[in-house]
View 1 (cartoon, rainbow, N blue to C red):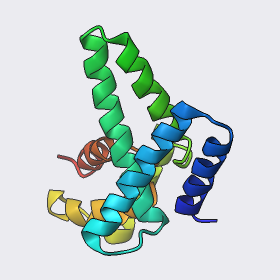
View 2: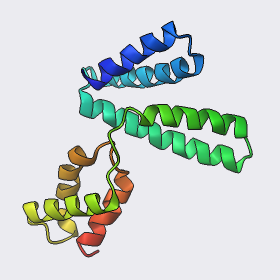
View 3: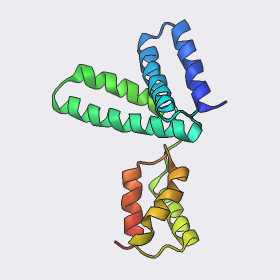
Length: 148
């Protein structure tokens, strides 16, 4: 079952169970997926759906931080709920050791030796770590291993 189908099935389940909060969050997810499909005139595969979910997680984390700084615990709680629900669809996150090993093997496979090869390394890694690691952290780790 594709990720998109799983999300749509969960929407139906939330409707039947009358889970208002879950339904609202799931509708946000389906709307984001549908928006990307309409914008690009394509049917999203699992990798692209993970990209949408990854972006939504990043947005929720930033909003959560802002709400906590502003003392808006009501809004922060809503963001925490949505963040948890979205993360349930993402694969298991990579540990630091796993990520470092993956970066090392990719660098050696590609024969990368300097910062000029960073784009190539990142493009190769992107498909392997999508939804499993923060791309900003991956970028920092790649720079570190390339000796920048």
